[in-house]
Image (cartoon, rainbow, N blue to C red; front, top):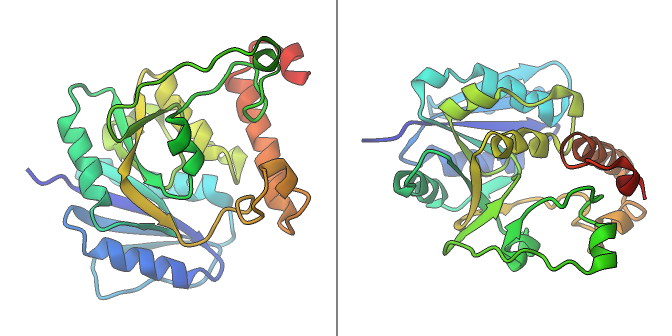
Length: 268
């Protein structure tokens, strides 16, 4: 039976050159029934010959959190089996969606969630898993440094990388899961709202897997990846200071509410 998929894309500003490439790729995909584009404060409407394209135009840039909140709210979940979330510069390979749908089909239980692999996330592939360490700050754990605690050895299931959170871009969510965990927290505005959102899946007992065969190529690099230095060094190099501030503020907020059980260790 054909699985019906809706796509939510959030864009802003003058991003037509990216969105067009992404939409042109999506229109030809077999299972996609609807492509909803949330225009975050930009006046451009993305109109093509395809009846699949729908536009929501927000008066101002309300950030990714409200963009995805609005897009997911607009989706009539009863009409679709899955929602695929993509950033406006996430260009999926032609078989990316097909691979994720096959993952769901092959899953032995309903507690698994699947996401595409962003090919510039090389560190994720090298490590083989993503898991938060209690009381760590941006992945730095004082306790682990002192006691040289060995990281757990997560055995990867072929191409599947176990993750506690994943970005919006590439996440294929069953509509039942959206009804279960709700919508993004708009207070985050920009950055780490996707961590906050997808960690709800983990806390609810779901297992998230990133499939390295389902490739997404980012047409534009994230602000901190452009500088070719670690993120905190990039903060002092980049001209996108607000991006850096939102990243640090929101990551700290996420950690305090989700992985901190000893504030003293965290502050240290």
